[in-house]
Length: 259
Ligand SMILES: [Zn+2]
Image (cartoon, rainbow, N blue to C red; front, side, top):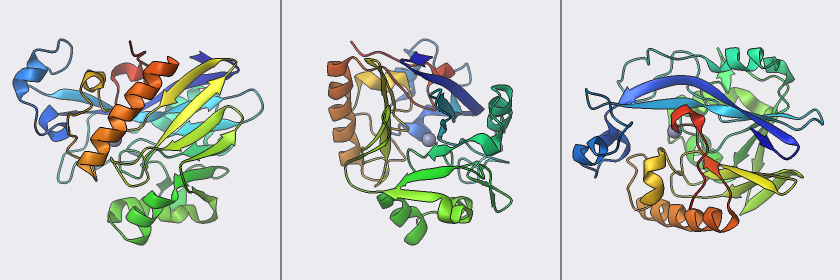
């Protein structure tokens, strides 16, 4: 994908088939069965996880979200996904060795987004700054909302760059915008170059089917009400600007343009 001067690649890390009620507890199975190409014959929704790589021709190599990591335990007590641990190999194949990544942007600190933050207690991307909203750092690491997440991101040490407030500009083409609800510090990455744009939305939406239904409650939202209003607000904003959006759980990591 080309966004002006910026090239964006998807970085699949794996796929976890799950009952869609795990993601959207209030929705009946009949809703999913009526949506072609979603659930399989066993009623499972194949949910990809992973991230994206953006390069700008000025030496910046930015990875957005880090998938499940080594031996990912993505649902408490759940099985290991059969397809997993692909993200580092994809980066190498794109000619981007792990130590050449300059920046990592984490949309939020859930385990399926921070998986490769560290491996065996060492940062996986040894040369990268890791951009994290301060409210997520406080919630998950300082206040200890999730031990597994804290263990993954604690080895980052000085490589963590906490940002606060509504938005921050990382490069002239990259802006991070606070979009709380799913987690306290959830954020969206806006890539804008030469009049083109793309929104990497993290878990604002887990599936394109939800783009017509911002009121669908996500089972993993920290604040369900705030989550719903943030989703509605962003739908309007992205529709107005004609900005395509994509998240790391979208099928084939394919961006969607709202109409
Ligand atoms: Zn997720």
